[in-house]
Each structure stands twice: as C-alpha cells, then as structure tokens.
Image (cartoon, rainbow, N blue to C red; front, side, top):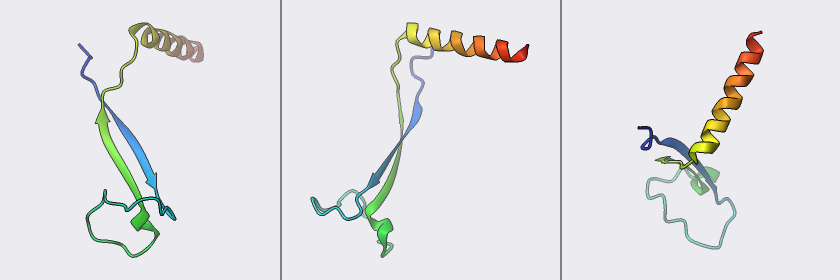
Length: 70
C-alpha cells in the first residue's frame, strides 16, 4: 500500500579548494566565485524501513502526543 512512497534526499557537495579531480558534474555557466565549487542535489528516493521499526516509532510518537494532550 505505501511501499512506493519516496522522500527528498538532499546531498550537499562542497569542493571548495579541492584539486583532486576536475568538477564535471555541472555543465552550466560559471558564477565566477566560490559558488562554482558547490552544488546541492535533491533526489526523490525510496527509503526502506522495517515494518516493526516503523510501528515502534509510530507507537512512541502517538504516546508522546497523547501525554502532551493531558
């Protein structure tokens, strides 16, 4: 039922000062500053979680919310 849910995964690349390789990932126009050596990647990915672990987290969250209501 919910097996195909995806979540955004954010990866930050900071290659400022790195001389180990040529940065070929970005092919657009250069900004002319430090921003040329930084990149943010956002990808939707499926995150696998064991059903029992998910149920435990849900139970704990609901328990906490009920305790705060009192």
